[in-house]
Length: 112
Length: 112
Length: 112
Length: 112
Image (cartoon, rainbow over all chains, first blue to last red; front, side):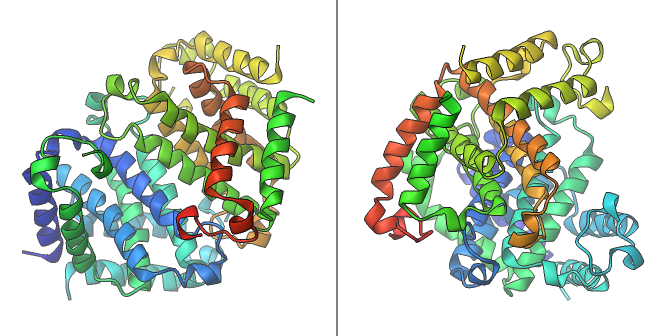
């Protein structure tokens, strides 16, 4: 069993123990990801980039874990292999952001 | 090398090839996660729960991959082990949502 | 003084009394809007559309007020007239969503 | 008719001309606000606070107008008076953030 499968198995057990699958449709899971992402952002709100790096790592850890959890659950729901989808997206992004154009700039692909 | 390490390695290579580490402070990465999460949500906007399950899987795959990518990059930046942080959070959530109270309800822990 | 000017004046007073203008750059204000929007979304999370309409109106009121507050502050910062920008956007959206194509459908303009 | 009533009237007309009220339940409107807020945030992503202030004002104007539009529509749906809800929230926030404690600091109320 890979690490991702182990994590997913633990998340599914937690969910099933509570009979929560009924709430976990794709639309609600997507909203849950957004809400957890906002809680992560709140850790850095009003802070400078420098002070943001001094935020308590336990807080970052907890919020990031929540985002990951709903992402893994949504991926599992659709039987998506995380490694495959990320590597596929890297390939796509490589076409949108070719090194020679994108190097050292944060411009969006449609402005390169 | 675990799957997560492989994915992370590919993401880091993509980032470094473009000299983008300079933009990837924690605060901006958190914002990027939020933005990608919103793009995932847009796939389901105005749709019923049923119709949301019929959304083109390629679109879900691509948006979810973007969220995962920034999550993996933020985790790597802070040397967080994904499996550890998710399992730790499951433990914490188990205390907030004990099975006997949380089973079958979507209430928030402070309303249980 | 228009209603919007009155609201804005009260928000500015609140902000200035606390010497918070220093934190209210456009980027942080935009993040604050997102975070408050997520808190609004959390009221409806895991709920059906029907049950979402039964959420305590006081909670909706409070979260919506927070979103409005940061929106008004960002508008004021850029000296934007709310009525003008919304009416201008309605005009633009009218071109993207002509009645004869958009009527009764929730499709995005690039799919009409 | 107040300015806010005029704006709301124009938004309602736009919506009704397209028979879109059927999609505008509270839950979807809240998600729409979040998505538009993310588009606003994207204007500032990867940018420093300084460069964020140089973003094309037309883009800020358009994204902010979208957020306002869905906020006004949600307020109208629940017959909320914007001025009342914002002034009420300012009062509440005044208790959470008393001047003598909150002045000059961006700390959250539970950390003051």
